[in-house]
Image 1 (tube, rainbow, N blue to C red):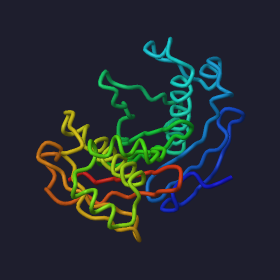
Image 2: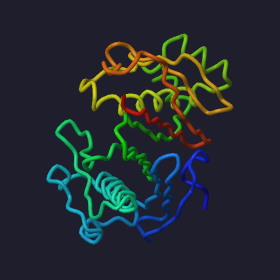
Image 3: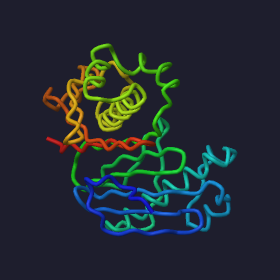
Image 4: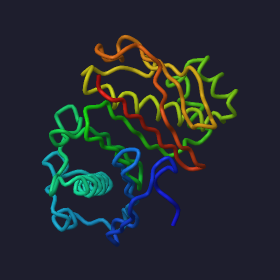
Length: 244
């Protein structure tokens, strides 16, 4: 099996809960983090109770795919929290869909079609992450102008990224920033409020600046360096900024 977590993370243990959870990896460095693959074909609503969770009312009539994503993500979060001595926790969401983490835990959760990625931190911090399947070139041609401005396209192209790679990666990076700052700014904002300034392909970092709309008021207006890991099929991005 291929590694799920980016090589930036030190693998602490791996696990599977077959046949639904086919592979899972857990790390403690640089932050408590985890990834898992799940098999939609093996999902059944009865698994939710089997794993010890309760399906929220809002998902009782959701399609199988949505329920499977919910179960896989809650299983992974619960397993990671268990390693932090927080037992039997089921992650719920507020009305705005933001997660309600245990007291003293700061985190971010993301998933795509069959993979979940979560990062937690036990000290006050802004935590954001994202995972995306790579867009096709055709889809990227339709979407890129909504995600990047002309200068951002030029920066990414000069760094050697195809349009599909660049669009997927910049989308992911801006999602990571949004997830990190939303608990503080408590407002929706668009892609134009986060601007790519530079790319370091050796360190796998993208430098961005935030507008006054996206910038948490108590934080200095300095560039953010977002970590990323990109393969042929997906991109993962993340950042943890310690609270002041």
